[in-house]
Amino acid sequence: MTEDAPIPAQGAFYHALGTVLMLGYQRLEPDELAALVEWDAIAMLLGGATTIVEESFGGHEIWIELVERLGFRSDLGLTYPNSVGAIGYVQGGRIVATGPGDVGAQFQAGLDLHRTMHGAFSDRLRIHLSPHGPDTVPEDILRETRRMSDQLGVNANLHLAQHLTERRVIAERTGKTSVQYLHDIGFLGPRVMAMHVTFVEPDDIVLLARTGTNVVHGSYRKAKEALISPYWDFIDAGVNVALATDSFSHDLVQDLRFTAMLAKIRSGDVATPTARQVLKSATYGAAKALNRPDLGHLEPGARGDVTVVGLDSPFNSPVFDPLRSLVYYSGARDIRCTLVDGRPVVRNGRVLGTDMPAVSRRARLAAEKVWAMAQAEGVVSRQACGCGQH
Image 1: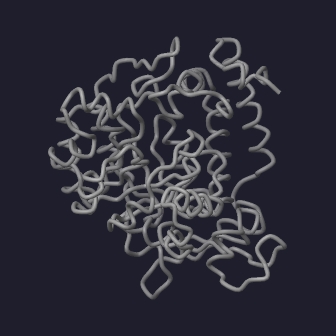
Image 2: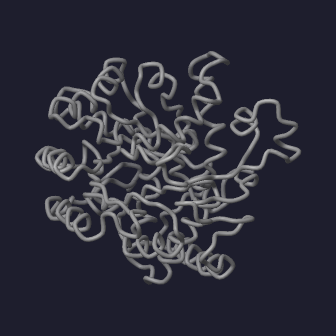
Image 3: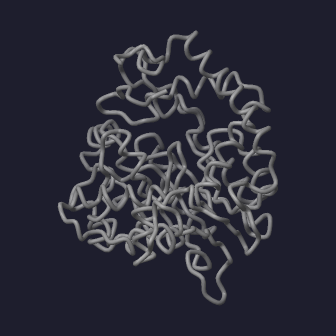
């Protein structure tokens, strides 16, 4: 719905989709939402993921059932504020937002979920705290989030320096950048996963490195907003970086290539980053960001989470350097199997434990329902309707 369509000048991808997302959450039946969520999980697993970080605005019960049934590993958080409207959407060409509601109660819901579900399914499910961002969460809740993160030994994940509206709001409120603001209230640290981190100053990067804060980089996701988020800037400064897809389609192998090539464009240097550095971010860097020393490597004592990629197709062979063949020439089409805890989750292009054709049919019908509602409500752009220039 947003391909080739404009987004607000100071907004992000989700602002353009906000009204459509609200329609879906409000009007889809539970089984329709479940079909869309499962189809998305299938895409991520077929795309090479073994651990999926889920920031949930609703339907987390659906997600938990999928973790149990399909066998993948997940780090789940209940986002607060917990509505799409509260984080902003486009109306009349402007970004507006509904009230955030009782953010303290929403934060408590995340703590309650941690108490009941953290470590479930042989530790394949872990629960983190998920404040949405520095511009949408009150300072007292951010401080309490950090305190409980330390007390429970779990991560606090948030969107940071994601778009210009966030930067403007924080500057007007505090006179600081988003990174400087979080640093000054004591929020940053090794148990923080900061997602996107696009609009930063050199001093911000120094603070992220000094505090050991983890950055989650989504190259393909930001490229769809005509942006190249820093990558090499962080690596060069000693910041730990994890890779994520965060956008349809969820081809994590393709994202390796996007990360490498867009970072080369930004750095102006063909030699940086290298394939090895990018692959490290997708494996060891991601595990470090999750505070999971038992993931991201294959050595005695580590979990058996493995994605096997074939290097024998016309697109990625002959092979002279396996790492470069993987990063620059491969994609989800080359994945042979995926294992979590040593057990197969994906084999020969199929996710085990689900009827993919049946889920596909249900998801298509649910998506068509959302599309029809969006057209009826007039919230889909001319480009999305196929009415733009050809």
